[in-house]
Length: 132
Image 1 (spheres, rainbow, N blue to C red):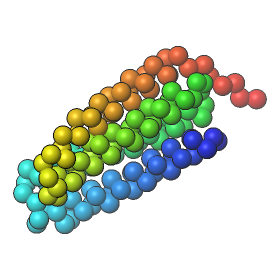
Image 2: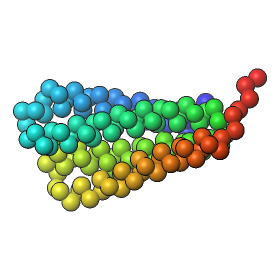
Image 3: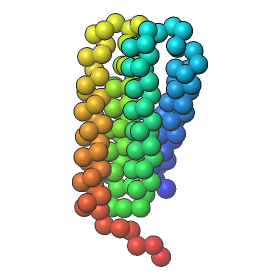
């Protein structure tokens, strides 16, 4: 397995760990602290982090099997960037960070969408590696 593939898989696993922890926190601790709208927004960020953490796992694994792998790994890094920009800014603003921080949220959504487009293109163009 390539070093970039290992790093991307580790980032995906850590992202999924954080999403699990924050989901549990939202379910068992934030309901007493946040208003219902902020709590729902926080949960949306958890959901998107889960979806794209699983996407990172998938493209990292596919990137080890298909060429050109760099496109699939690029999709994974776009998912990672989207998680920080989208979910991260939603978490922060739901927990009381200044509203201007939320101006980065749409950039995270664009990273998510770009990652899926790059993934689709890469899979369409990929040539399978022949196993010996």
